[in-house]
Image (cartoon, rainbow, N blue to C red; front, side, top):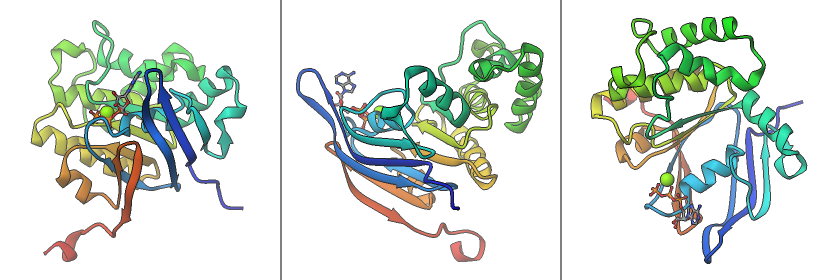
Length: 235
Ligand SMILES: Nc1ncnc2c1ncn2[C@@H]1O[C@H](COP(=O)(O)OP(=O)(O)OP(=O)(O)O)[C@@H](O)[C@H]1O
Ligand SMILES: [Mg+2]
């Protein structure tokens, strides 16, 4: 049997008190192994959708399935377990814990997976090596550059080996070169099988990804796939 889509949103809406309709009936299916960009104007609902997909927020109506599980049928405890097992997050402003070194920030990514501390730290060192930060284990966030902080955040997201990585403007606070390193890491992760959704305001990044979903006023207004240009084709 084929695996269910990693994400399925059906007529998902999100209304906030005060009459804001952040999502107005969103339909989106993301298959295992996809790498997609979510683009659209500020306030169009991109982060709201990512939070709903990531089980951080529940929709007002409609259905959300992650890895085939209908979120409305799960208790908060089961939802947390699903999130811990399947989903990694990366944010624009890193969200690292101040005063904790890179290893412990990454090890925290396994806190809810029931892994003992010693193994958490061992796996954190491995994940940091994967993002090429094995020379910065003992650095706290204020001792790291922006690009390095984002690589720690990526290591924290990938240490639990999630099937799905959700990134909300991961290059938004970075210079071009650091942003490119972050995107290279996301491409590598995707090549090794992780499904990835990236919100971005950067057209060059969006255009370089195989699928682009465009938002406007809480709705998806276009969804296009292309074969990414590589090697010969780009010349
Ligand atoms: N907690 C909240 N309470 C009320 N309104 C909210 C809340 N969170 C978001 N909104 C509103 O919902 C709409 C969608 O917000 P969202 O954060 O999803 O936009 P976005 O597309 O991610 O924008 P940006 O590109 O600026 O990050 C906005 O109009 C915003 O003001
Ligand atoms: Mg946003």
